[in-house]
Amino acid sequence: MTRFIIIRILQAFVAVLGIAVIVFFLIRAAGDPLDLIKNPNMTQEQFEAVKTRLGLDKSYAEQFWIYLTDLARGDLGDSILKEKPVSEMIAQSLPNTLKITVPAFVIAMILAFFLGIMAATRRDTFWDQGVKFIAVLGQALPGFWVAIMAILVFCVYWGVLPVPNPTKQSLAHYVLPVGTIIFFTLPGMMRLVRSSMLDVLDTEYIKLARIKGLPERMVIWKHALRNALITPLTTIGMLIPTLVLGAVITEQIFNWPGMGRMILESTFAKDFAVVQSITILTAILVLVVNLLVDISYAYVDPQIRYQRT
Amino acid sequence: MFSITPTIEVKKPEKQYTGLSRRARIVRKLSLVVPLTVMVLMVIMAIFADLSWIGLPDVGLSPKAPNDGVARDKLLPPAFMEGGKSEYLLGTDRLGRDVLSRIIHGARVSLSVSLLVIAITAAIGTALGVIAGYMGGNTDGFIMRVVDVALSFPGLVLAMLLAVSIGPGYWTVVFALSILGWAGYARLVRGEALRLRDSDFVAQARVNGASSMRIMMKHIFPNVLNSLIVIMTLSVGMMILAESALSFLGIGITAPQASWGSMVSDGRTDLDRAWWISAFPGICIGLVVLSGNFLGDWIRDKLDPRLRQQ
Image 1 (tube, rainbow over the protein chains, first blue to last red):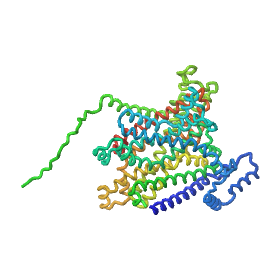
Image 2: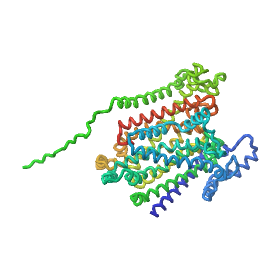
Image 3: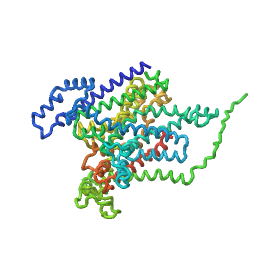
Image 4: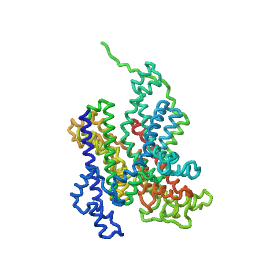
């Protein structure tokens, strides 16, 4: 087990390094970053100053070395536009993002879990059809459009909800942003829990549990549940893209000053230093989550432990 | 002498299969006909929006030029509402551009992006998947590790990185969606190839001295084709959603070119007085994605029932 974890950590480390290299060269391959900074209002002196400050006057090899060592020290560099450390910008905007994504994620997971199991155990009933309907619609309608239509209906026409404002403490301001992220994450997970539960309910040991006369409640919550949760748990890593997309779109629609808006604004402003560090941070996040999923999976399922080292 | 006659017990099905009820049959037929019609309409819209591809930009389905606004006709409601003009069936936006014409032209963007991306990703993913599944060992291990990362890496972040380095636009979207999109195909095809590798006909081919290359091309690939087609159809909707989300955020198709995602975004500023600018393109996305998914399900049931999710 220890060996398995060590190998995985090493692999993840190599992967981060690889992604860092790709990002560095992608930014430079597409054009000189200096072209991005240049603007007509800048004097030659200012331009040179920025160039030196960002270390862009050095050779590529030197730049690459500085970039890697800074990264290793956890220094993400400075924003070109705002002229302050990227880490500071993240510290400011991350709490706002977490305030909406964490509750949304927790609610979506709990809902997915209960609705998925309910649909599987009451197969082909009204409830199952309802869950399937939500899943089909949720996977076809674009989340950004649903959010805008929600503003139109709830804020403009009915006026039952305020237009979300992150500085207000009232819960009502959180309903729409949190709801939007739930819309992004719920349908896929719900569908997965349902089909995983159906698979498990079809197995021999569940039949045995039923034959020996266990009450249905025990069969489902004690025997089936644990096994039905393995598949959804291992795909949590694949929820990251959805969650990121959901957060960025939500923050954009509701003017929420979180990470999503920060990256998007940096993208429009061509602030490559910010986008570059966010990309690498995302890569680290992805690898850490995958590592944790792998390890927890190996704990649950002994076959994996010995097979895949 | 005894002759051993094998007795084959024919089990009668417990319930006599009576076929579907009349209502179920109609529903089933509709679930093919409706999505098929929507998709065909979409393709016609995309191809014949205008005939600029044979040098006739003024001839076509689109009633107006999509990017030319008439200032005095701005923010007109759809024709069926009070104050609407019959020449603007679905109303106009704040620049006086015809919403319907822009939707028709937007179909071209959505459809061509998704087809291009699907072609690229399916080709790369299939090649890597067949190699991983057939070769096994370290090759397989390495490819699948990369697949794991690609599947959980947010494409949006990559799209932003590309938008910064090469600027937003049509090809940035295609590139951004392709870089990660192959992973899903690779995973599916690898699973199939792994199963086929141990089959008798592959063993036979190996005994006959076929090279690995030949086995992969002539024996494995044709057998994964069915599953591949199913997944390709099912991802049309996904790609249209992804493209529209990127365009909505402003890192995809940029103004003045019409795309459904950016139209929804444009409509936000006038949401309180002109809901139609955002509403109609969104409905189009939903309809097309829904149809794509239904068609995909139908093709899957025909070609490869094994893949059916309960």
